[in-house]
Each structure stands twice: as C-alpha cells, then as structure tokens.
Length: 406
Image 1 (cartoon, rainbow, N blue to C red):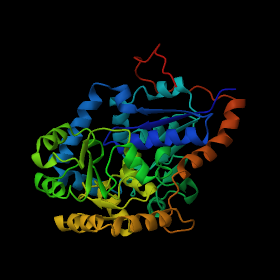
Image 2 (spheres, one colour):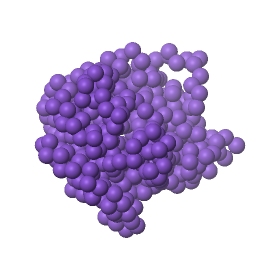
Image 3 (tube, rainbow, N blue to C red):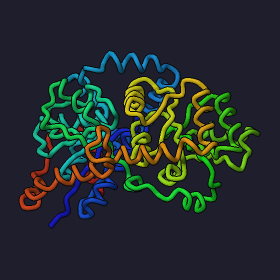
C-alpha cells in the first residue's frame, strides 16, 4: 500500500513562508511518521534563473522604498488576484506545475504562499481533483490568499478567521491551528544546562534576531547594545546578512567575551531556550517560535505590510513591546541585569500561552495534528482507488522525462 503524500508549495519572498512549510512537514512526520512530505519553492524550482532576480528586486524595493510597498499592500488589501494576474503567473512562472503534481501524485497540496495557492486553484478549476489546504503564515490575511477552490484554510488566530469570514469564506472552511513551528520548538529546554553545553555564561541573556535577511539596527543602536555586555550576554543571530556580520566583528565594542555573532544557524531553538528576551523583527515565524517557547519579545519597528499586523497582534496580546526609542532597551536590560524581569515574566507567559481555554492559547502541535485529521478520510479513498493523473493545461515540456523524487 502506497504511503500518503503531502506536497507543500511555497515561495521565497522573505523566509517565513518556506520556513512554515518545512516546519509543518517536520510536524507531520512527527505526528504521522508514515506520511511523506515534500516542500518546494515552486517559482525557484520551475524557473531557477528568473526567480532569484525577482526576489532580489523585491528585497531591494522593500529596503529602499518601504513606503511604496506599504502603499501597494494597503491599496490591494481587500482585492484578490484578478484573472489576468493569475493567468500571467501561470504563463510566466508556473506552466509546468501540472506536470509536477502529475509526477508526484500527492494526496493533498498545502500552500504557504498566495502565488502557488492561486496556481493550484486554477488547476483545480481545470479539473485537478486534489484537496487544497492553505496555511496563512501571518497574523493577518491579505485578500490575495483567498480562492474559492481552497478546501480548508489553516489560520493563526480567531482574528484571522474573522477576517476571512468577512471576505465571504464559509466558517466550515476555516480552522484555527496556529502557525506551525518545527518540533524542536514544541518544548522548552533547560536554560542552565544548555548554556553550559553551548559554552555560554549563566547570566541574563538577550537574543537578537532579524530573520533570514538580518537585523536592521543602525550603528548607534548596536553600540548601545554592546555597552551592556558586562551585565547582559548578547547573542546576535543575523541570518544571511553577511555585511552586518562582518561589520560587527570588526567593531571594537563587539570584541567582548559575552557577545556572540552568528550567521545562519540550525540552533535557534536552543538559542531561545538559553535567552531571557528576544529582540527581533516581527516576522510571523520567529515570533511564533518565541511564543511556543514563552520568550518575551522586543520588536524593531516593523516593515510595511504583514510585519505591522504581526507586531500589532503580539503587542496587544501582551507578548512584546515595540522599540520606539533606546530607552525601551535600556529599561528592559536594566531589569534583566537586576534579575527581576525575565525569569518571572517568561514563566508566567509560558503558562498563559499554553493554558487550555485561554484567549491566546497556542498549541505548537495543533497544525500538524489538524493536517493529519484532514488527510486520513481522503487517504483511505486514495489508497483503495488511486486518483487519476492530472495532465490538463501543460504548456511546456522541459520536465518531460524528468523524474521528480518525493
């Protein structure tokens, strides 16, 4: 009997969408070891030359013209992708998506970005008979996520569910699951023993993260942070921001035994475990990982769009505070150095987050379990009567003869 298959489709605009897909794939494996999952950044997979150029242009625009990005986000906030845009996406980027689906023969497709979500919806209108689940990876929902062909929306909060309902999505097609995090974040580790394991001091510790594109503090803020190194251990996790990493390592004030400067790392779960506060951009994934760990947060002023909405949610829920001025950091570090704030706050927060029935309950296992529950009624039908292979709408042939392993 063939093992069930789940195809997770994302795009690389930022890192959160793909990170959520990988986190969910790992969670599915833990909850249902017999289910096979495959994560693909669809545009990059089908157009390895063009996709990086578009992503680079997007990143540059976000950095140089954030107000323009904000304007586009707001003006299009209640507008779904129109038919012309969906057709253009298909013709330019995704003409071979049907071949990918036909070769992999998944029992369900989960999309963590609006673009592949729109493309799979288009294929469903043409006859594709596979359940489509859409995982909204932020604490807000732009109208571009919405397509009538989606069988189930997996969302972060009741507020996001309400926004979908306002836009006409039936409540039965929406399930509140929280944003998935990797199983490494499902439980908190022992702070003291992990500090010893990682060669860190057993002292108040601040973790500074900026997502895959690095933290966006200016030099003045960085020097102010470094001035606390005698009293607060600083762990900088700067992702792929190689320029910032090199710059900090060259600055004399960062030549301190209580300062660690890291690039990309797979140890984020442990870094959160050893820390007492997280300073970060309000990206959906990083904030959710901190939420799962019960780690208090300070937010760098957010980028326009989803980050603003994420920030508003976490601040209103009491899990974080925006760094409007250097005084916010000074006051927080003062509390940390006095050993008053962090241990008590983190412990009470962790209990609040995971308290059954709490308004802000977050169960990190929920999303993977929800997918398991959605899969198995359909899986029973698939294993007894395999789905017909879908081949309609294939415009390109460069994948012909190419086997795509699951």
